Image (cartoon, rainbow over all chains, first blue to last red; front, side, top):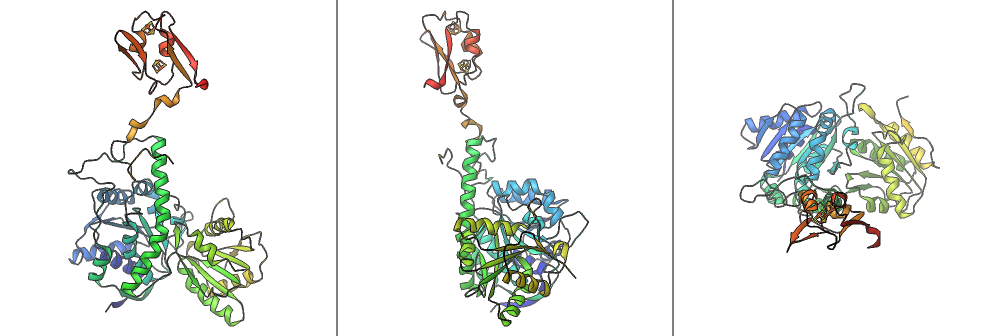
Length: 389
Length: 88
Ligand code: SF4
Ligand code: SF4
């Protein structure tokens, strides 16, 4: 029997990560991620967790330290937010191009300026093309479960890439929910141990790591890295199924479709806003509107075929972005969904929405307003900003 | 894609050694044994050691010759001619 407890998202992340028994944890506290570091430090102090835990002096060091540890064959964990992620950008990129299966929670926080500590995935979305896998979750149970699945996905032989589990600052990090805790023995069996062969600092197997490399070879490595990202599409789906068979919970893999079976219209969301949007879909359904919801769970690799399939029958769709793409006058997810559809030759009307920046609420009212607009859609030339009256 | 590595991450002896300076050449040095006076200037000055002396004769290997023309420029009897690669 799985036990359960009430806990906030940060505690769910810390427990989830510790169930994977990382050998090395290095992190620097930053709001709203700070409690993750505090919980893990406590677990180590209490002797519940045997990891080598290091509270380093900056995020740059945190990522550098887990990179070194991963190179030495350790299973690693770190967590950050916003400006902390920005500070670690250099070793962040290198961790993926060295093909190290590091797991990092990103507690999404808006990027400054203006000065802000509140939620918004602008931080991780802005580095989506750095070669990491990125999964965005909706609630605290999903945080817990994906922390465990993250290791399974990242350490898969066909993947070997670092992974971010991203969850909204405050909306999830500091919100308390009931969360089931997977049994340790089952997690041990599910994950096994990390045994690297592709890159390792090991005196008994000497290899030169990261030598100066010319473009021709670099393109070889990039080609294989892109291929590994594509392999991850299937691995994420399989891992979801295997997790379900052991622990009884599935998240749909790459995307989650909600009331999409007969839907004529679709609203697309990502992260914690999905809860309010599902409520709005139920409300609209009661009022005779044929609408469904698609939750994008995985941003990298982008689940192109799944999106094409999910939207194949709709007359119009809208995308709610809690981020902006400077220079496009829309959010990022909107563009990516449209790019995916281009290949399928489906050119139905679509509407870009932006809302919830800097921790602003994305309310039920706003989601209902968005659904109304989608159901009367002809192509909107302007992005619609969801704001308070 | 043509693969020059058996690794998925940048490790091992691949590194800089795979740079093929021979790919850079747009003109190649052609050495005339009749005109050559065996002075050895070209062998001493070639920056990639593409010239060797075998059985008293100087010969140019084109696998790493980058076509810089230093050998041709300095050869006292003008025994080396730089021929455009386009004809190959
Ligand atoms: S052209 Fe330059 S590289 Fe080629 S043999 Fe002459 S000196 Fe050496
Ligand atoms: S520099 Fe000219 S003459 Fe001297 S060895 Fe070379 S080819 Fe012969």
